[in-house]
Length: 350
Image 1 (tube, rainbow, N blue to C red):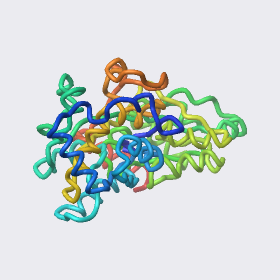
Image 2 (image 1 turned 90 degrees about the vertical axis):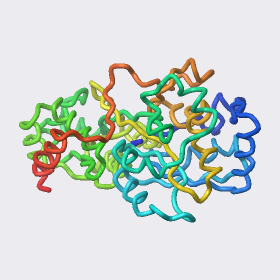
Image 3 (image 1 turned 30 degrees about the vertical axis):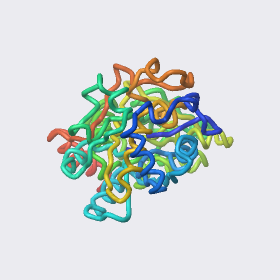
Image 4 (image 1 turned 180 degrees about the vertical axis):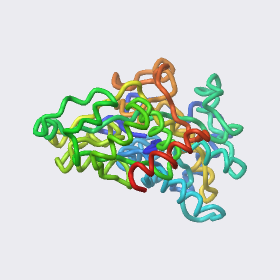
């Protein structure tokens, strides 16, 4: 998820280099009527698993749509879809738009989702049919690479080797100083563990990991990164760059280590509520536009599916999804499910 799994970022003043771009993208009279109705609704609610979105997205959105209050609510990936399930059938409360990493959830709920109708979809995503899914009802709108959070001071104290790859996470010197995000309930995260375990060395690697007595963090990457930053643990995985960056900027001896080959969680955006239908369309359109993509991915903590040349002037830190990366989609194969339920969880005593 965390998932969108996504880490969000924008320039510090919230005005990315696309702030001079027409946020309506020349949508015409019909689209302007939707924008006017959205302004009258005055509010829109986004559920996301992206770290930092609660603080970075609202000011960026407000620069383009000052009459619409954007409320961003953060949940861990599994909690997010459970919350959406609990809200089925409600009309006056809850999310209008969601960014969630489980393609399986979107597919199973596609019949109740409205189509995304804003001009950004046609203008920027029409040549990316593999990312526009469910009959224009949800879009693979970004990907978050997951790696390791490392406390550099604690690593030296433990006389451990530097962390550069997956197998380095299993050093005996790290015993009782490891934190992990099991990802239970988030199919995309469960897929991450399937691929990461292969890179670590398979079934034997799980035995090694269990022998190191890792601490499980059920609530996602943010509390894990906090404990790595404080030195409570030395290494945490999986982690996002955004969850470690804020701590590093505050002076914590923490760094994000991207692990190769990259395993990234794909994040999907769609409209999930009917309470504020026009504001929901405006927000979904904005998230798929250059302004929204820069607000989400400008700092490079997560990746945009669009090519930078398509977006105009963007921060140098912004990154398009590398062609050689593996993207999880949250649709577990029988083999992956058998691994997670039959090997991974039992290895942790769960």
